[in-house]
Each structure stands twice: as C-alpha cells, then as structure tokens.
Length: 364
Ligand code: 13P
Ligand code: SF4
Image 1 (cartoon, rainbow, N blue to C red):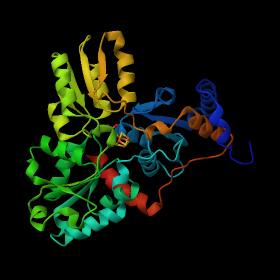
Image 2: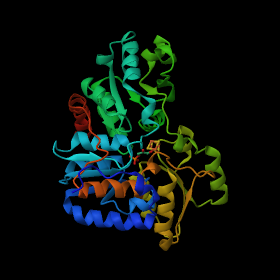
Image 3: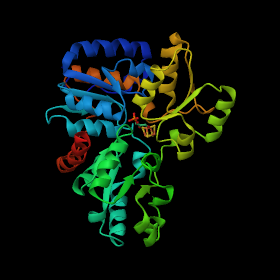
Image 4: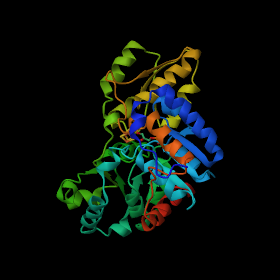
C-alpha cells in the first residue's frame, strides 16, 4: 500500500485505452467491494464500466440496495450525496470529479429557500398551507429543509405521484429548483397554468403580489436546466414536416411548449425504454442530453431505428462530462491502494433530515 494517496496529475496524460485497462484491473482487484453507478448522460468511455446504469431514481435505489464498501457514482454531485445519505454508515460514496455539479441544482440554495419560506409565511401560514417539494437535482441541505418542513423529494420518474402525496398533505406546493418539471407535471395533473406562479429568487417576495401567492396552487422556483433549454417547438415542427410518421419524446426538464408538442414525456429511463420497445424501423426525435441520444441511436441501429437529437446544436451536460476515464482510473487505483479520494460525505444532521424527505419519496 502506498503511504499517501496517488496524485491525480499523471493520469491527465493517460489515453483512454490505457485508462480502460487500468479501470478493468482495479475493478477486478476490488471485486464486490466496489460498485460503479453510471447515469445515462455519462460519456461512453465511462458508462461502459458501470455495474448499474439508470435515471436518478433507479440509481438511488441501487445505491440503497448495494452491499459494496465503496459506491463510485459516475453522475453529478447531488447523486453521490443521495448515495451517502441512504447507504449504510460504513459505506463510502465517491464521485470521480468533485467539480461535477448540476448547474440547475445550483440555482437554489438554502438561504434563498429559507428566505422564500419566511416571505411566504408573511402572507400565509407556510407550514400549514404549503408542502415544499424538491427535485432530487438539489443539494442535500434543501432535501433536509423539505424533511423538516413536512416536505418530500421527487425525481422525473415519480413527480406526479409525489405531487399527489404533497397536495394530500397541504393545499399548495413550493416546487424547486426546476420550474419546468413542476409546471409539466402540474399540467398533467390538470392544474391550470394560471394557478402556477414563478418564484423569482432574485426579487423580494419572489416578484409576486400577496394575492398571487394566495391564489396559486403551485409556486415554481425560477430554475431550469440549460441543456434542456436548447429544445424548441420549431425543432419539433420541422421534424413533423420532414418525418410525418416520426415520434417525439422529451424529458420533463424541457419547456412546457416542447413537452406539449411531444408524443411522450418522461425520465431518461422512460425515454430509453419507450424508444427501445418501439417498432423496428421507427424514427425518433429525442429532447434530452446528447450522450444518451447518441448511445440509443447506436444501440438501436440494428433494428433500423433512427434516434435523432432534437436540437441542431451539439449540447451535452458539461458537468456530467467532467467524469472521464482518467478520473475513474485514479479513484479506483487509489481504492486498491487503500486510499479514499473524492469522498462525498453529508453532515449527519443534514443527512438525517434529508433522509426523512427521501424516505417519504421511497414510501410512495
Ligand atoms: P433522470 O432522473 O431522468 O435521469 O434526470 C436527471 C437529470 O439530471 C436530467 O437532466
Ligand atoms: Fe443538471 Fe441539466 Fe446536467 Fe441534468 S442535464 S445534471 S439537470 S445540468
């Protein structure tokens, strides 16, 4: 065993093939002590090493069910935090690159949410009237906020079920950080657009009048995912003209207009399942991250399917992309040498309250 952790620097000059061999060797040496979880947006060179792949919900379940000593999360930071919160205390959650955050998750922080809650409380009794719901794409302390205010976590897979639960608790929902998932799910549940207001966290009282807050059923945080913002209705209209029999499928982080024009809307796992199960020869336009779409296209070419990215612009999740084979080889070889690098560890009090909100989600 090396006395100190192995330095990252020399890995930068390794090519992907070298990394491949070293990752495979390190995984073999670690055996069942390690599990690698890979989100669908990961690049192929990393994704192929995952023991389990999935959307946020599926991967959080894999993390909870894992017996491995080390959970190496190839995804973004909030996912590794969830793994730490719901795994056993002796398990260690690791992200190959600590700078792999989620830009949308960063659009809401605890100070802003606490201020929003205080301002809402000046209009109505927030703890009586509002269920706070955080998308899993959020920091652990926001999940903890929800846990300690009777709220809950949702993912893109279960958002409707979670909102049903939330409205059964209290008459209104404060939904953060993604306005689009909130709005698209609310619309699906029959909530009129007029009853969904935007909370602009840069403005006093979210930029709302007290009466707008009293009338609202859903208060939507003004957050968004820039990857899913590149999809536009015109892209779907062009596709429909060019491929009249084609199908359109989008992630609910895309805008209301894009989701309304899509034939199907759902999580990354749902998108993969729906396109995979479709008729041979079908042609799809897909509104989600590019790595997933390209991989689906390559995998399904054998069935003569065409799987096309919705935007003419090349747009990947740049933070997911920070996880590369060099970082993965580095964390695994350190584990072989008995060193944990890039551990993601959530403070106990925060983790306890966040676990309450996550558990409410798992119970639904
Ligand atoms: P999924 O849970 O659908 O994989 O979505 C996570 C995400 O970050 C999408 O941008
Ligand atoms: Fe976050 Fe968007 Fe990347 Fe998903 S695609 S991890 S929401 S920045």
